[in-house]
Length: 149
Image (cartoon, rainbow, N blue to C red; front, top):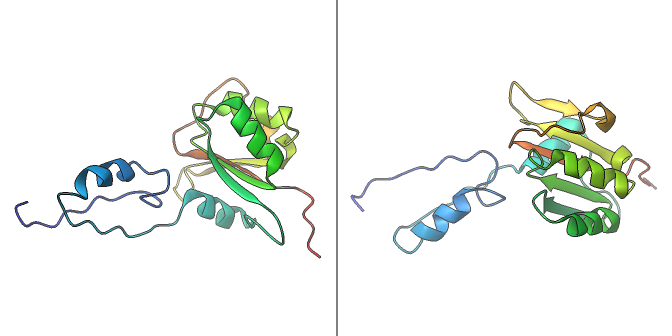
């Protein structure tokens, strides 16, 4: 209101599972806002793993680990590639759901993508089944035997 320009920096894309979406909702009626898109964490995970999110006729879904078990299981069963965001606090539950849906072997777990403390676990059996992870974490679940005809 005082005529100053203000920047709200976000990690990733500000409108993709980003807290800025809530701030924008409050500000847009009072201020002129410009949103500059960023690279989403699924895209970053795909790049760091050198593993395409989709190829050929594969389906792709992004879901929050905060959803209930039924919705997460349906998503894992219906789609070839699934990214589960907000995985940290739900990690033990998500590992169990990956086993239940027989997608455990398809999964990879990533923390802090692109940072110095980046962590990639390609063998989910190495993850402790009873401990949570950080906020900046996700599961990338892709079929192991992808048809590339």
